[in-house]
Image (spheres, helix red, strand yellow):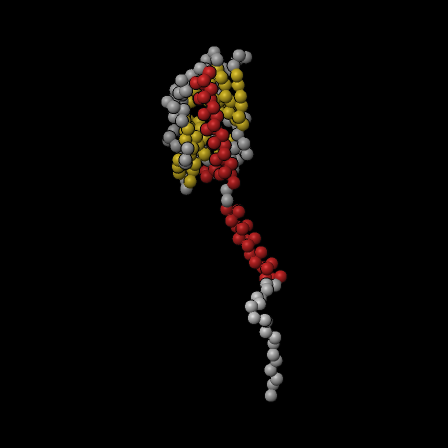
Length: 197
């Protein structure tokens, strides 16, 4: 007759511990899942959002300067150098003179002024569109002009994108001419949608 072996039972209330192999297998599985999740997050989207917020702040600051100092302020969007130039134009000639005050705000994290695949207002694709756009003689340096009353001569839309030039990376800032109020737009699913202001 075969002999039955008895195994020692663990004491009542004792728990079974995990082995080192089981713990390492769970850690490896979690790392794989996290790896897939991180690669799906678009850090470019966050960078472009931050740059549109920067441009909105430029317009708000320019409008405050125009009203408080009773001076025309020209905000030029320089596509060559990827920056905004804020010019307090004391003699109101649209040109930077020795008596004028100028500041620059560069775009960050690789953002650049770019023509989008399609515009919000349905006009020909350009990095800035609308009746409020002021030509400076250089198509890569277009501007908007804010008068001492805080208004523009018309509406404008400014577009930025990433070096990847993917449609989902494009962002836009609308500027309402009468109030200089700005709006924030992004591309989602191939169409423009307005975000919270």
